[in-house]
Image 1 (cartoon, rainbow, N blue to C red):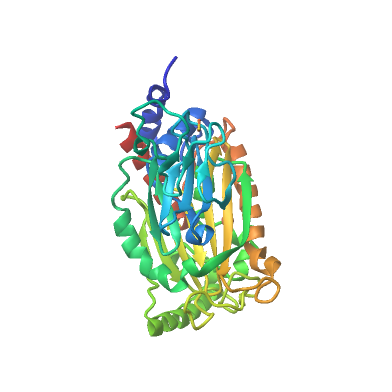
Image 2: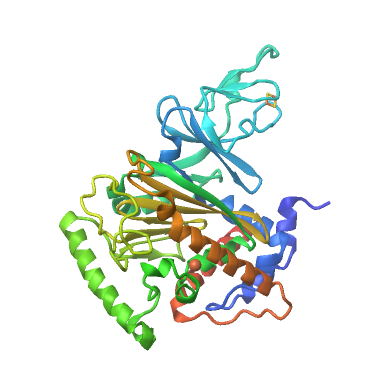
Length: 420
Ligand code: FES
Ligand code: FE
């Protein structure tokens, strides 16, 4: 029987990678094969920094979240000293999962099998009767590398995590800081299982070519000119573009007055911890992701003093995108379940003092992205069905899909690196 590691390298993945044509999507096996899926889990999700939760979800000592990443289960917990930790959810006795709920709060973590008991920092506190010489300090829960960037919690499952993460954190933190995510709370959370490969989910998110026809609620405020350069704009979008430019000028003025960065930084291929960040104007009232663009919550985040600050959009490869508005934030996390199934977890954060029904209405807050997610889920399922046909052949990306090409190039780089 071949081992997992052997299986990874015995297919023609290398040949498939060598055949990849820049400017075109991947070939079908990348979206269909169990073997490639296993390789993705090992080479991408087991190697890269992943967004997993927010500080708002582990606010107090003992608060925890568990996240399933392929075969791994990770506990993100705030320890008794107030530090956010990530631990492997694997008992050091005989390997049982220690925590089984998706989230909760604990004083200590007790494995239900034989009651080994761990402190919130992972230290083994109690292991019943043991042979002489048993040293509890050798059997704490294994630590997972963790970084907290302005309220976002990132983990890396690899023993040698990519070290460019601190550079990325240094560059995105000034964009995020004004929103003060550590002073927010979860208003809503939505898990959607999309019937498509995780890469199709991410690729779909890296372009807005489909937005004009596919997202009527989103395009009330999201300019569907996204991704176009001026000389590629179709005539019908010229009035929208003029509106975008006016809104951008106003936004830049507001940001300059407050010393808030807004310029795009885009490094989506050619670096390990790839990212894109930019603050851009919204259409309509320009304040929030609602169907009229007006605020969804009356409580501003952080120390912000104005609602009309557009959307701060952040993309982190491999598995996340975010929009930070003045009145709320909406965060998206992608986790692979199977070659043709992917979990998309959406979390809406509002100011910690905002009261539902008083400061915000839940339906109004979630309406746009609830519908947009469902529409994207349908688009991804159709793409998955299409690539499964023997007739599928990768076609050319349009110029406004350049970020999809960047994502695929980055993915190919990671697989090559792993197989090398
Ligand atoms: Fe956890 Fe035995 S497996 S206490
Ligand atoms: Fe979409």
